[in-house]
Length: 489
Image (tube, rainbow, N blue to C red; front, top):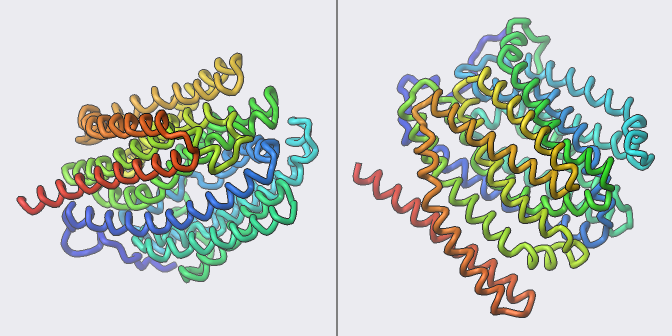
């Protein structure tokens, strides 16, 4: 068995400084931003067309079964992907173990979904769901087919190649979805988009990152992966179930059409949050993991990351929330106006969830598996309790419960991160002060535009320009201040 170590920044004879890692992070952020602008732009175009051509029920059908696929994905992941990125030194046998464990769990989990697809359809009382579940099972398998290649690109900071894979995949999926939508395929336009995307992504990863399994894994490598990953798998599976519980309860007790409004209401804020996450988080975990035993530099890189992400996220989501009616009517169409409340609540939820994930990444980079397990279980319990209580008020009540549970979990995570590192709760809260006042300033400007401009499209464009200028100006000030402070040092 080969024991040659993969090229890694940590294998250098001299330890790079935190400034070196900050530079690496920013390069990763730039590639991530370019990739995400293309990806989210294409996704939004396809979503606009599909939302105008399909009924809310079609989106409700997809959302209703999301709980099964969230749980399936966590079972497949098993936390072992995080171990590959987080581990200080990586061997070829680790990649072999990762490949075979991932392949085995993917086949088993997706096979079970196909077998139980009829039972799932019977649970909801809708036979149309059986083929939906079967196709989505194939999508989940394909999305996991290139995970070794994916992890190697991320670990080795090959963000240019990774971005190329994503853009090609999204382009192929978008074209397929649009063709099916114009052909009147209904819900199959959504399924076709995801199927082509996942297939193209798997093929592209195997072509661009030329790693192939060279044998069977050693037991010690499998044991190492799951000693780190098993607690994460259990806790994140429970967490995934709790996050998607609202979709299952909504479909069962409220109906597919209201669930469709909820799903589309959360779509744009959720994509905005994913945009931020994909730009920054992929780089952040890799770099923090390399600094996990250097507390001062770990704190420096983490707070540097936070001081960019929080303003970006808060201003973006605030602007979306203020202009929700105009965005929904212009982008999705007037028939989706019942989604306004979910849209605005989705902005709040997305912001809290990003902050929750930021703190999770710090614990993951530190290798604090026991704390991650404990915090994920607490998060899941809070979500289930608050969502179940909110059921009496329908989907709005359940969504409010989801937000409340996430907010409490954020506070608990911040406290634990403070115990495991030099990153105090107060230092994280201080980062929120400037973005809060800038968001308030932007809100007042946008409200003035909404009150004084009558034409829908003009109002929409003016609010968009105001948000873009405010966000760009604030980020420019942040980077200027950081550059000046570093030059003084």
